[in-house]
Each structure stands twice: as structure tokens, then as C-alpha cells.
Figure 1 (tube, helix red, strand yellow):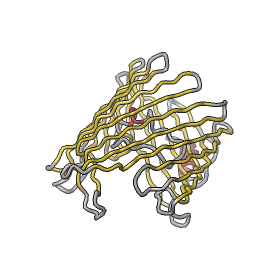
Figure 2 (cartoon, helix red, strand yellow):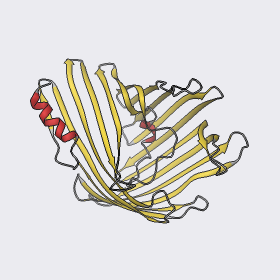
Figure 3 (tube, one colour):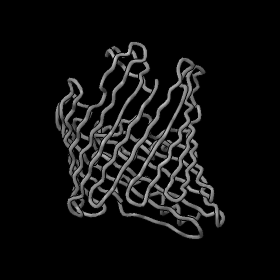
Figure 4 (cartoon, rainbow, N blue to C red):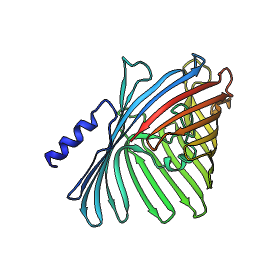
Length: 326
């Protein structure tokens, strides 16, 4: 790589403040720099996990290099600088770090990245703020993940395999995931996914997820449902003794774009866990969230969400934030 490219990319990757977009393209190579500054605060009970400061800085880079007319290499790195606990004690974490090859038969990548189920759960993981949503199960990022992705007209197919890197012989990190979405011309998108793993020799965990979204004019409606068997470990008695739990969850979303800049949204999230040993059930999530978002332009938005918390002994709360992206 040329020295001029390094001089451009490195300062941007490690900058502590958000700047303008920087794009490099030359001789079949390209680098895109992106980022986000999020300043949020949670109001309500001081016992709430969402109470107080919720701010972060995120910076990332997307890299691409042509190998031939039908083959290219790509990479992505994304770093987040959390300020939630204290501005004097920030936490830095790597969100994404992977490399891969893109060809006529699809894209293959390896590293820390989203698993296959994410393309299905994303239909309703659309809360305006950083505080709410995302309760369908194991649909997130992980290390040592090998992933395949391809699109066939309106169909997207993703498959992922999480390699085992647990040095304890009695435990395993291996996980298989498969998901597909199909987008029809009239605004309807259908999605389904499945994952399985065996964390220990004592049990096998699995998760099945289905969803759909429909967009017409200024309105979008979406719903997702997941059913997991022995997929969660949960402390049912409050004594730090965790046991496996069956998992049932669903999310519903309705959004209406009032004007070009103003939109409103209603989310409902419900998750029920059942102790596989005693059959005890509990509602771990029961959220009704009302949100409003105002976009000043494509980069800056202000957002507010109010949650009615239906979980026993949990209070309602309110989240206010401003977000700048490039």
C-alpha cells in the first residue's frame, strides 16, 4: 500500500473526534472511513440499566482491493469508545474486525462480525435510541466467525459458523447459523433463520426465527418471532445460580414518516424465559416504546423514546439523544 494511503487512513482511524468522510480510490483499491457520535441520557429510576449517561464515539473503515474482474478482497474494522460509565473511565471495544473475498459465487469472510441470523432480526431491531430493542436471542457479533453471503435477485442467503476457541475442554463456542430474506417488489420482505450450538456436553441449544416487514408510502410495519430451546442461561432466583432456559420472544414495529424530516415509531418487545429444570416462567422483557425522530439532514438527528416497562418491579423510563453520523 502506498505511503500516501497510510497517511490518509491511520489518522482517521485513531481520531478521537468525528470528522468529515475520507474516501481513497486508486489502482483498484478503495478505503471508506465512517463514524458516529452519539450523545444520550436516560431518565427515570436510578435502578434502571438505562439510567444516566449513554454516549459513545464510533469510527470504522471499509477496505476493498480488486484481484481480478470477478474477484476482490475486502476488510472492515470498527472501534467504539464508550462513555456510559464515566467520561473519566471510557471503555474501548472492537465491534467488527474481519477480512474476506467477494466473487461471482458470493462473499466469504472471517473474523469478528455479525452472525447469519442478523439479517432476519434487523427487520425489527430499529429502535431510534441506543437503549431499547434487540431481544430476539443470539443475533449479534462474535469472534472467530466464518460467514458466507450471497444475493439472488430478491433473495439474500447468509450462513455462518463460529469456531471454537474455548480452552476449557468441557465447553464449546461452536455455533451454526443460517438465514434468508426475500424482498418482493410491492414492499413485502420475508425472513427466516436457524442456529444451533452445544455449549457443554449436557445440552444442545437451538434458535428459530421468522419475520416480515411491509412498507407502503410513509408507513412501515414489521414483526419478528423467535423460539429458542435451552439457548439462554438465566438467574431465576436472584442468587447468581444460572440455569438453562427455553426462550420465546417477539417484536412488533410500526413507523410513520410524518414529513421528510420527522417520523414517529411504536415498538413492542416481549421475551419469556422458562427454566428447563423447574418449568418456572418469567417475563424478562416486556417493553412498549414510543419514539420520535427529527432529521436535520442526513448526518444529524435528534431522537427521543419513552418506554412503558411491563416487567414486574421495573419502572418506566425516557431516553433522549442526539446522533451525528458520516
